[in-house]
Length: 379
Image (cartoon, rainbow, N blue to C red; front, top):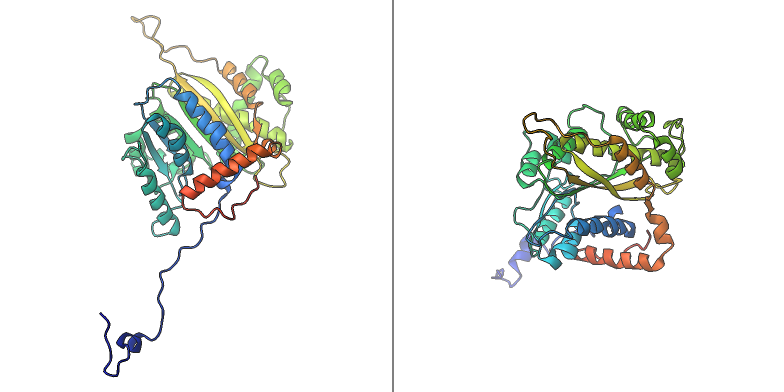
């Protein structure tokens, strides 16, 4: 209803003035580092490839159980659903953690929209959720993070995609990431099927806490001292003088090779401490974050664990099964780490592949409500 003043003027205009009101338009969504084609290469050639291998012989009625740090756009989850779950009729059940989406922030609005969109997709378990909490909180028995992980786990894939160094927290500090990994691996010990652990981490001088770095390197030096042929394997596969290398003064590429093996061994040892498992460093991808870096400074590792059920050899005198050959595992991780893929180099040398990845990324971003008209075409 329109109210008029006695002389015919609009009463509302007299009160409020001639002001036009329009709804506030949201700021344009900006592209993030994980929207680049090289990240799509890792998503396709590592995450999806290893998931397909994992589910190759599993029945379609077995759900895909996923834990990760998906970001507000849920790009990884959209991609997994499209390429694996939708085609096979397999249920996707996920738990994500986000510290970016503070309640009331634009990021929180975006996450809520994305979560609603993904939950509406076919074959998505309604229990699936992304909670506003730090992944590190899993290490606290009284936290919501641990309660949710315990209720939905164990998981078939754990994808911890970090923006900084994996070992950047001081050991034994409150809320450090190591407690979260230990707690999560204890939960994964209940998984009787093979499962994947994917970890992305920065590697370079100053990326790790000094004490944590020394503890990681101690695992490496243990193999140098105790494992026959380990030093020779380092020289053969990595061109690394393992017996004399100084992490504080070595080259960037030497530090990269050294820390990939050290991190892989730490993650393997963490799992083995909970349950004997066959270990496979299934895939290693890397690229540059810092343009001036002399080699790759971000690495994505995919480790596959196959739990081993071993009975005691004497039922009347039960004993723990013999431990896995730690030296054999170390040599395997070393050898497989040498097959690292330099994603930037691959894309520079294959323009057709680069175009494919740009197209795939733009499709995923469009589904997440991005305007891809000005999508950058770089790696």
